[in-house]
Image (cartoon, rainbow, N blue to C red):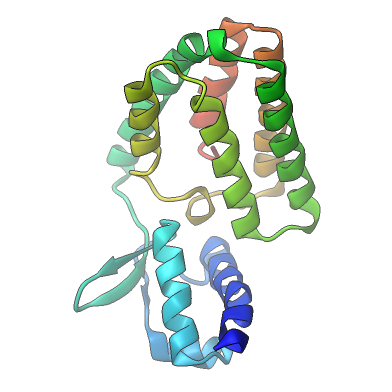
Length: 206
């Protein structure tokens, strides 16, 4: 058992990278026996990896049918993105009074970690740090219902690695915008933060 647990993260990342690179396109069904053969993995390891990928919204699980790569109607995706822009830019003014030097330092550390992971991290490590950065920022909201609604809306779409989070230039833009947000928070500049958030959400790698 310990050996299986140790190898599983590598398997999760390999499947995630194949999803991102288009080996498995949107809506593609992932058959466990095929994955076992492709990755030279045991059945239990494959099942655990699929459960992890489901939890991260790279794939979806349909009871009695199996797992498929996450897919969303383009119009629905655009509508959710527009809702996110409204909610997250609105949150900028709500959270700003709660910004502290310690919280700015914590967010800057996450921005630096994300940037470093572009060089030597895995796709899912980038995903986790990106998630932590945005959760940390919106956790400063005074309006807890707004913060919860933002998290809920972010969770309604596919995770960034399942979308077009694929080109180097786009993910580097996302990394720079993290630092821009930190600077806006440090300067207590609501309008600048709102502008950066709108750009960040709009480019679909947020």
